[in-house]
Amino acid sequence: MAFSIVSRGLLRTSREILERNMAATVGALQQQQQQSICTLPFPMGDCSNNRLANGPTHISLCLQFVLRPPPAVLPSVREYSKKNAGTATQRRDESDSDSDSDDEFERRRQNANVKRSERGDSAFWRRKMRTLHGIMDVNHDGVISYDDFNLLAKRFSDLGHLSPEVAAEFTDVIKQTWEEQFGEITPYNLVTAEQFLTDLHHRLNDKKMAKRIGRFLPYLFKAVDFDHSGHLDLEQYKLFFRCLGLTEEDAAISFAVIDKNGDGQLSLKEFVHLGRQFFLTEDDTKISKMFWGPLIADH
Image (cartoon, rainbow, N blue to C red; front, side, top):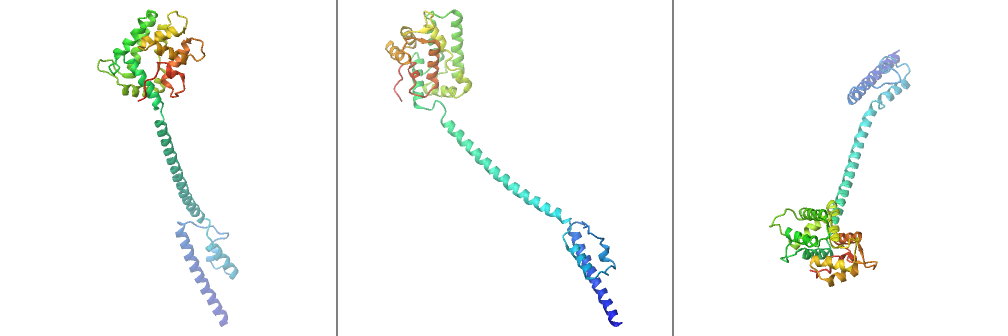
């Protein structure tokens, strides 16, 4: 009898200790998971009420389900994973950003290289432009003015081989060429050799302006094509050089070089192509270098 009373007392004490521990554990989990309630496979009351008849096995099961991390913990794990993933994504973004920075640096470096290798940077091209500046400096005062342009154009028009309409077009083209290339028409707008090179360099590297280089060439051709055959022979080419203020000997040397097929004639298409190539190419093997006569001595 006494043993039975002691056993019931121990059992009651064990139950109360278990209930207090369980209550404390559940309370801590509830607080940690922001009042999230786990769903057990049997009612929570089965562990907290007087249903301990199944003995230690039932108590063990209750402890396992109470102490096991409830499903509500999983969002925290996911949130932690997302946080880590966000950090990893940020690192990847930073890495990609670094890569973009490297790419941008490389593009700038390549652009810088392109700028350093623009058309018209070679000594050969500059030599050609100095030669042309000397030809257009009709009064030989060391600078080119709009008066020089007009005087040169007048030499070709005065040959009398252009119709009034074509002559008027020629005058307009000369005026437009000056304004596009050198600016306003005033007696004080004088173009030195260095300024001439700078202006033509800019024109050469502007796609729209480069297309208009040599617009005056067809008028020069028509002015010296006195028989209107559509071709220039050596005599007509000498006339072209006389208008430029160059010698017939220079004309003969140049014509022998640029008459590539040796037929003794230059078509309008060949004439314009060679004249434009003089401005555009930096290849010193091209025959167009002789279009305006022998080049001046290199500086």
